[in-house]
Image (tube, rainbow, N blue to C red; front, side, top):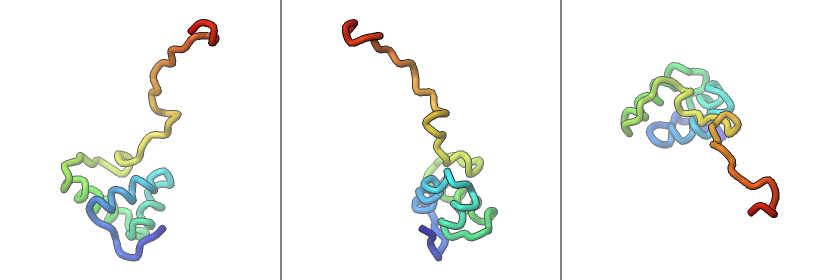
Length: 83
């Protein structure tokens, strides 16, 4: 969903994260910044600064895909008889 007025603060951060997997251009449009990527990233930096979160760029807000995360080691028996 695209908003007509640019979002700010926590709403902007939430919207940017929710749309982050679609890319920065789509996120900017859906957060109300149209094609102004510079203004979008400036607003994101201000929003993050206001809540004490370090912001270096849009990719900082995007969660890595589950396949890219370290899911740890699975420890399980080979069969149900070995429980």
